[in-house]
Image (cartoon, rainbow, N blue to C red):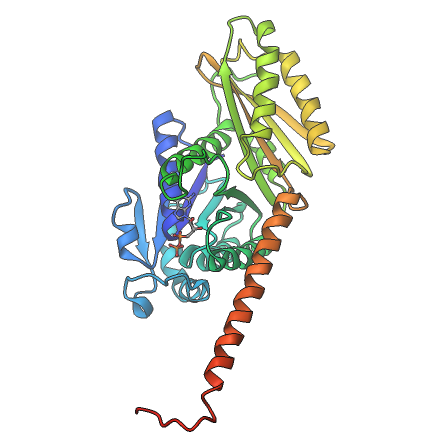
Length: 362
Ligand code: GDP
């Protein structure tokens, strides 16, 4: 899938960069363009990709803090600048636009849904969101912001692929310390997914096609992507177990949205040397995936790569009913309720001064 990436906000810019770098390192050329948009100069400066600074008249390059309503306002006011920067980058060969953002912050959380809506108005290709959910231990504001942003993205985007910042976290890794490796892991999964439909060598009828990725993402829901790899033997017959086990791992421990296995649709991509991919293993893995997801719509295909390893990439579409998503929404709702109570307390405390006998200082 030839894609144009637009990162909004700090996380958006960093994940976009990681994806563009992975795609270039692998020589896939599925990422056609990458642009980073932000209200904060300091977050844009270190990025190697092209950038657009928005909201200068309101925040003067200093960012919006965690205020995602301001992030949305700024994007609504300045989206023309972003669209202008994209005009020459989104050519007729682009098959999708991916807007990438951390949903818990301000600029990306508020700006991404607005930009997605504008892009869908202008372009005929699908506009996907790639959203980062805050980890459980991030503050209430992050959870509330992410809840609102996700709700809006679900309405505006063709599909929303989620990365949970609690995914793939090793026990000794703080979230912040882990961003580099988290971003690289995400870039690998999404990068392989985008490139899978672009495979040119060793093409056979079982090779996965971009339309299968698009159909699995579906219209309007939440998606998750998983990955795992293992060494491959020369003889495909010896790789049946290896492929089954990478498929299981991709879903059970490798998903970008852990445990979100209740899916409407699924796509299983077997990546590796085409002569080592076991047909029987692919069939068995597909059946396992049908059972695990409860989906009747499980597609499958190969991604031929020159490698002595075998990998499984699993894309799950329509996972919005899964417990993991429900638990996140509950966390966001609870955080919103707590924030409201705190605001009321503050008003109560202030109004307690209204009728006392103290004089103001000024
Ligand atoms: P913005 O610049 O105002 O859009 O805010 P951020 O992009 O910093 O969004 C904050 C959220 O993104 C928090 O939930 C952070 O945990 C998360 N975040 C920030 N940077 C990264 C990153 O590089 N990778 C990942 N995965 N998450 C990040």
